[in-house]
Length: 231
Image (tube, rainbow, N blue to C red):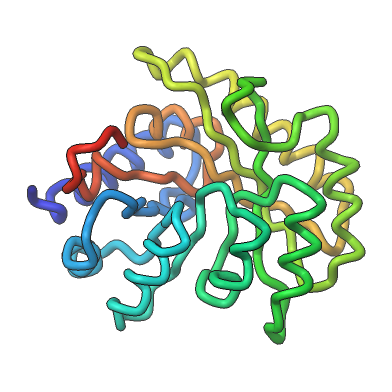
């Protein structure tokens, strides 16, 4: 697979989606999700121009970060167990899956950086029982409660949209997350600037960008899948 060609094609599609929405493509971070690929393929992605990488497993993040010496950004995008926080809290730049008070407490306890760690609150906008995340009706109270944790800065919201054959079917979920993000921004909470929207994957990222995504998480369409498992 030619990652450079994939990346150039994706960037062109992102630019076109931004143009349709009256946005600048510079406002969108293209993240390569590397759960199913090797560190070697990460190296090829860096050579192609990718600067942001997402991992959903602790061991995957640690293995690849320690193998890669280039100055790139690492995002933890999977469900994070409280007992695993200490392993990765100083190894990633952004945590995308803050969804409960116990996790916030553990991140605050374990993080020792000079500035707060950037976290995105995961929101379950679809209501699917199989997906993690704060429900929309509890989002504001949850974000307000994080004010007591000075080691955490809420820089945005994240969601996992339902899988659909027609990507247009998930557009309402992206639109809802954007509204929720805007509602939090209007509160002007010092600990929660909440400017990012992490939404959109390989099959629906254009719709996500049109609806305001600032981070899209791409696996198979960008870096492929070396395991044969379903991404």
